[in-house]
Amino acid sequence: MKAQTIEVEHRDEPTAFARSREQFESIVVQLGSTPVCQMTHSEVERLIQTEGTELLRRFLQDHLWLRARQEQERGLTGPVRGDDQVARTHQRPADAGLMTWFGPVRVECISYQMPGVDSLQPLAAMLNVPQGSYSFGVRRRVAQEAARSSFDEVVTSIQQNTGAHVPKRQAEELAVRAAVDFDAFYKGRAVLVPAEQALGGDLMVLTADGKGVVMRRADLLEATRRAAEGEEHKLSKRLSKGEKNNRKRMATVAAVYTIAPYYRTPEDIVAELQPVHAVGDLDERPRPEQKRVWASLVKTPERVLREAFEEGLRRDPLKLKTWVALSDGNRKQLKLFEKLGQEYGVKLTLILDIIHVLEYLWKATTVFNQEGTPEAEQWVNERFVEVLRGRGSQVAAGIRRSATKRGLSKKQRKAADKCASYLLNNGRYTHYSEYLDQGFPIATGVIEGACRYLVKDRMDITGARWGLDRAEAVLRLRALRASGDFEAYWSFHEEREYQRNHVARYADGQIPQLLSPVEIGRTNRSHLRLVD
Image (tube, rainbow, N blue to C red):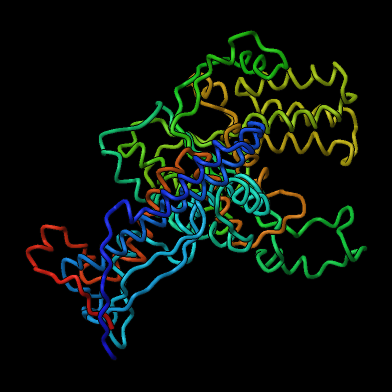
């Protein structure tokens, strides 16, 4: 391989940023010109936005060129040796395009090579240039926008508000890449809390639920996919009424938070559920603290609930708090809570969501009263208060006796029997009088809200059919945003990318750095560089 010499042009800093200064002067001249002085303020705003973005792009480009010249002039502190321990002694100029927040730039550097092994580019490592052609600034914006709105809107937002351009397919891929460190981020946080500390209020609350997401057929669970393939549809272009089953995959949604006890009576609960509240009543309610919410389509419900227990133990490693789990009565979920509570050595109080109980009572009242009448409401209120006093089994027995005395058929009394069975089957989790005396929460409002804003509001966009990897990535990004962890996560993600893309490729994880001016003098370096 023939070697050639390249003479490095020496430029001082003002010359190095000549193109940036040129653009700056151009903006100043334009703003003082007669045509611009006749514009409206909004027109001037748009002009400054366009020209100013180009100025910032030139600043970045000029800086990258300066760094490239410094690498050529100064050299490195040591040999470039890969993780294979092979020194790269051949040098070639290299450059690559990078789409940044301000627009496209070129990253120039020296590529250190050796036959038979991968090349290494120390300057690219110092700059933490990511794999692919999009900067971390662009990737961050894509992740933020993808957590909020559709990918079509992501593309439009980036095009309108930055100097970058990202096609839809690339935006989807960037969102998936942005979420890869989600699990590692939360596992790593476990070491941040000293064992003697317990964060937040006195109650540690765990809760979970499920929410369906419309998927592409290939990404449905096997049983659901088989059922979907066996369906015969009336219409060729769309699903008709009653044909919308077997399209969804269930996301397991979880929430963990701490909260201070809130002591109430059954009468207080009934008053809280009235349409009108006294001023200040709800302001006294303690708010959830340190709340984390997340959802997964990929992980099993057991895996998600394990993560909930692990998150709780991160905050309360010595189990000093009172642990409470809220459920809507799903039998598998209740069994998982009990199993994992024993496995992790946590004394867990399981509570049946009171709002679900109330819904069953409202359905049951239509068996005995005309729907929407004061009598129907009074029937519900009377039994609801009794349930809150811990007498759910007596209420269930009374409902069944009443239906039997009226001689109702099985079909006529169906809602009443269903309500009674719900109360009896979950009797272990309906000791509401005790829960209220201890200040425990008894409603799953937090997880119900999470199902809505974490899953439904984004994943139920009309016409959307999700691929599994993209759906999981969006759920993770939304979870980070909803939990207030996005900024901390992004710093963690960039560091992980740096380790993966650069540090791991060098011997002993040591990336050679540029020589300082003092070190250059000591090495008596020539300003002529030999490259292959």
